[in-house]
Amino acid sequence: QVQLVESGGGLVQPGGSLRLSCAASGRIVSINALNWYRQAAGKNRELVAAITSGDSTNYADSVKGRFTISRDNAKNTVYLQMNSLKPEDTAVYYCNARIASLPLTWGDYWGQGTQVTVSS
Image 1 (cartoon, rainbow, N blue to C red):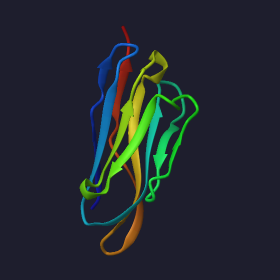
Image 2: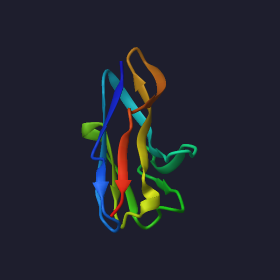
Image 3: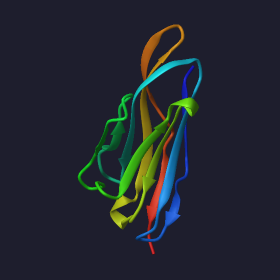
Image 4: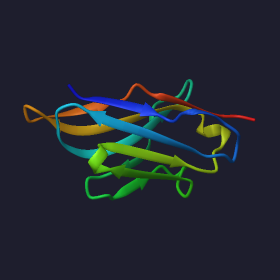
């Protein structure tokens, strides 16, 4: 059984920074794409940032230049460094991963979500 566990959310003032982490555990063979999504109250879930197994990255226009996604393959962990936070970044942030686990099956997994609130 594969699990994704997020951490690092919280309350921060506008202009501040937070770093989210998402660690995958279980009988993992390989991790392909790693993604961060967010869902604000009353809105659809949206893709914020993505990183491939080859470390190519992609960002939503709303976070380009402010957020950075990275991965540590040795720790099966993906990070989201969020700088210059704005009130409109307030949302529940979810990590998502495409993972191959024993007995050699690919699956699409989600974390439980972590709340990020940007407010003065």
